[in-house]
Amino acid sequence: MIPIGDENPAHRPPVVTVAIILLCTLAFAAQLTVLGGLERSVWRLGLVPAVLTGEARLAPALAAAPAPLTLLTSMFLHGGILHLAGNLLYLWVFGNNVEDRLGHGRFLLFYLAAGLAAAALQIALEPGARLPMVGASGAISGVLGAYLVLWPHARVTIFLPMLPFFLPRVRAGWLLGFWFAMQLLGVVAAPSEVGGVAFGAHVGGFVAGLAVGLVARRRPRPGPWGPRPPNTR
Image (cartoon, rainbow, N blue to C red; front, side, top):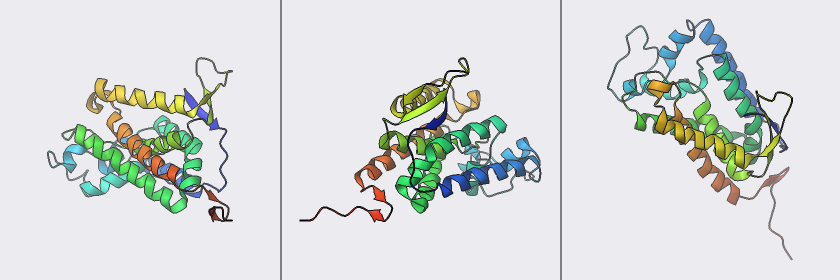
């Protein structure tokens, strides 16, 4: 199931969401050119849990950034065009509403914090993993978690590859709940060293998003001129 749109209009332009999409796209172009190709760039700037925990070292030619900095750089790199396109599609569909609810600055901080939470759980699950981890999916998982809490009944249009001319609409709660269940299953069934997907990062980011969504749901909904004041007599 591939989400291609939702029936949940935003009231403010998603400037941070668009900026992240552009930055990831530019970073991917740099991976293909000035950073020496996909494989080399992933090793140079991706997050290798074993390097961060001190259990392994990269060859000097590949150590382009201090290990702690790769917690950030890895969020903007991708392993291929499909990896990039899939992540950015999810961010485009769900990010604008979360940004609208949180505000531009808070959304950016939330996005980066969700990415760090995603990396933290993946490292905790596999501290000795020696494959580099890259992609925006951990941070975007946080966006999905927040969206699930804030708009569980919003309708999302999905594309089914086996039925290309049928575009059903499902509730976000069902779609994102199913997606999260698949990530939990992946944590148990397919460690990243074997399956190539950091399911633990997806779970960590999503749980962080759930927490932020619960906090945001209790705050007054902002309007064009800020939060609505309480009724007075």
